[in-house]
Length: 285
Image 1 (cartoon, helix red, strand yellow):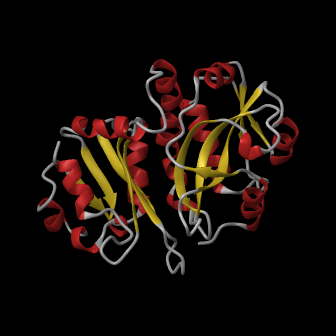
Image 2 (cartoon, one colour):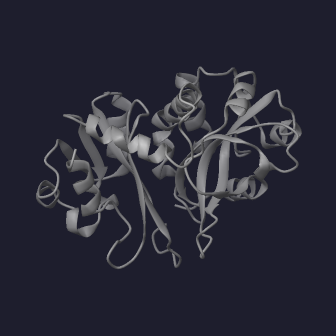
């Protein structure tokens, strides 16, 4: 599966920013955001599954601001107007990484006279995939929990001014202690080879878990909406990619709560996948 050309052109039109940590907006930006209408920017290809997936998730979960679904052309006309905020795909990279690998995020941005899109304040963001040749079918079905997370993240940072880009990941990782008896679901292909069977996982993780064969199986689990369900969202290079950099491993709930957020540089000792060390970190709590 490959990204459609229209989506590629769309991404080339929009944000490229130096990403360092999960975004935390200041109080002023949050107050401005709460007065906006949030424009959900759609792909021009009306048959693209991204459009239907993000529309469904927003209609079911987004309550923090009024919402309008808009085209790319609408975005270009409204992006400098502070009456609007935008929920959209962005292209980001880690400015300290020598390889400057780009990743696709879904972000909430504040409109206004900021001179360029990449200067627009970011209220929240979430990694979806590598930018090049990503299979969006591997994350579209997760937009329900992801949209809930984006909204929850904004509400959290509004209510707790002590949270910053330097400590927000540590804050979220404390939630691992709340996993309790929740069942962790993971797609088999997202596991490193030394933890890709139930027996291997049980050697490192004693809490409830299930390995599912395909992403379609995980989609069914998420659609059931059981709040005792958590799942692994893994961001790694597309199959056969000549370039590799980071692998993100995130454990989140169907309710949008983040329980674990980590990444590693891909190497022979740390392959693309949810690692044995990730299970051990989850098991310590």
